[in-house]
Length: 73
Image (cartoon, rainbow, N blue to C red; front, side, top):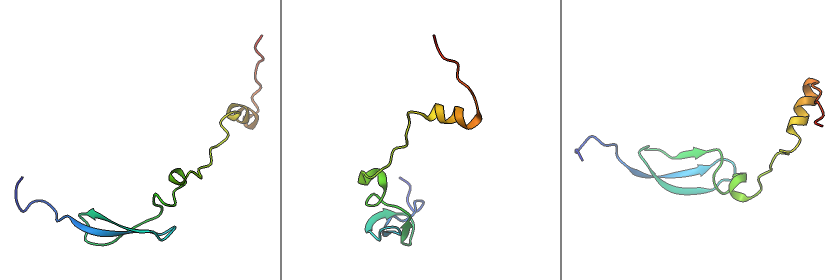
């Protein structure tokens, strides 16, 4: 590796604005990092994720735009 061309890698504090969790990580930024959501409060990681009703989406679309389905025989 060439010397004196790489940014300085330092430890920074990351703060979640949603839940207030703080943790330390490495970064080339020289200041603290603020994030909107972290793994402690994100619904995907906490298991509190709401799944949309997948079945019936086509029917909702058809109803919304007034499209009548042909019945299969």
